[in-house]
Image (cartoon, rainbow, N blue to C red; front, side):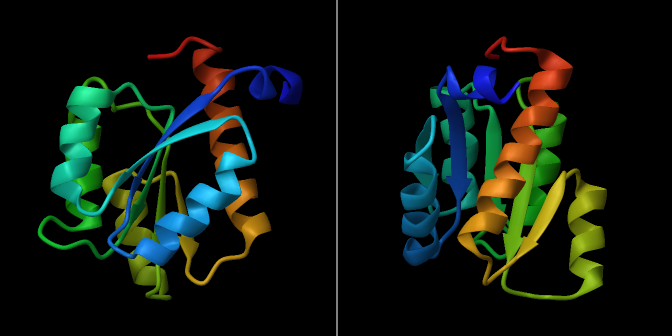
Amino acid sequence: MAEQMAQRNWRVLIADDDPAICTLIDTVLRKGPYEMVMCNDAESALVAVDRQGPFDIIICDFMLPGISGIDLIERLRGKESTRGVPILMISGHTNYAMDGRAKNAGANLFLNKPFTISQLRAAVSHLLSKREAYFGTQNF
């Protein structure tokens, strides 16, 4: 399956208002078969989903200006086009309540900042392998 995952470009939507985190994620994932779209708030992420979708995975921060990351996830789960897309929520707030809120909203995984490069790669790879097992290689 790893060979199949490497044979295509995975589309990744990143919603984070911290330019350093966006740059880090972009730098780490660009070394793999990924195509990234960056947004600095939830509203622009929702627009990107409608105009630039489909995406294979969505990475969003818990704390975003305007609409929160939790609200973003709930809205994404309410849309037919993103209902099954894996979502990785990241946050600098480290407590179990946030992890639970993220998962209750529909996040598949929660990763605390600061995270390591290997943690990020492992989380993304894990979510994409589960997505591929469920949906196959079809791009939505």
